[in-house]
Image 1 (cartoon, rainbow, N blue to C red):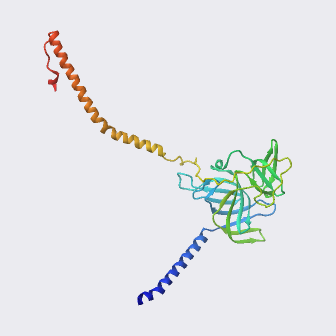
Image 2 (cartoon, rainbow, N blue to C red; image 1 turned 180 degrees about the vertical axis):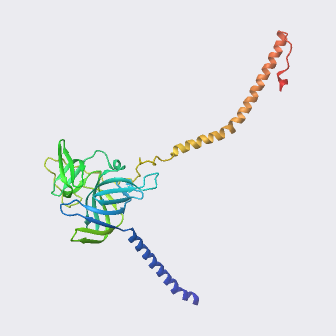
Amino acid sequence: MVAARKMAPMLKASRCLALCLAFTLQLSTLSALAAPVEMQQLEGKPAQANLTLPAASIGSMLLPDGQISVSGQLVEVGAVPEWLFDRHTVLTGTLIRLDVGTGSKLDGLVYFNGGDWLKNLRQGRISETVEAADGNTYVGRISTVTSENLSIDTLPGQTRTLALANVRNIVSPYSYRFSATASGVKLSPETGTTTCDASTVSFAPARLGSTSSSPTALAPGQPKARLFASNQPVLKLPKSTLAGTEGGISKKAITAMVAVDAANTLAPMIALPLTMALGQGRAENTLNGYTEANRLNDFFLHIPLVTSPTAKF
């Protein structure tokens, strides 16, 4: 009893020490997951940024070992396609906006226009909407996106060109907002550069009026934009067309091969007894036929008897 009482404080101390170590390790792990982010959104200038952050999915697509990289205005999304082991760039696009919103969260807008998985972002008929900083909204098909401008075909023969700095929002199957929790936000007044640390990025389709609480007005003569369905998509891994991703043998082919191999193995075990039995009966019938023919020849044609066929055996 005395020894147990003396051991009790030591056990409590060791438990406290273990909890402190676990908490310290957790904090170090979280800090290790954070990555530096540098961005610049000057008045009248396109957004610029430098970051590399992990991402798990975009739209209905899984991103195994996913990652988003932004260098200047170039946005690249990488993932490990099926049947491969290395990360490949599956989506490329242009950074439209990026800043630190409320609650110290990164808020970015990207328009994708390249990559092997670009076709997987499309859902039905395409209708794209561009919300400008002046409050006008243009509906049509985006034709070009450069480092400075964006052009959208609003009506047959009519094209509107907007500076990227004046684009507030884009609603399109190819337009996504990405966000991440930021920490240690610092702003340099001299350069207008904002730096912070961020962790995992989450993507969400851009919605009408998602950057402002007040609705935007349609430009004169523009049709009303359609809203996309808000149902939660089922995540899946797109089929890759990269070299080396042809895949292996399907489950159906493997099943068929196993069935054929089993049939080839069992067939002799089943067929051999049947063949032996049928072969012996057929041989006996043939020998009996020879014997009867020999007797008939001797009785009617008086042909001398030949050696009995059975004697050969």
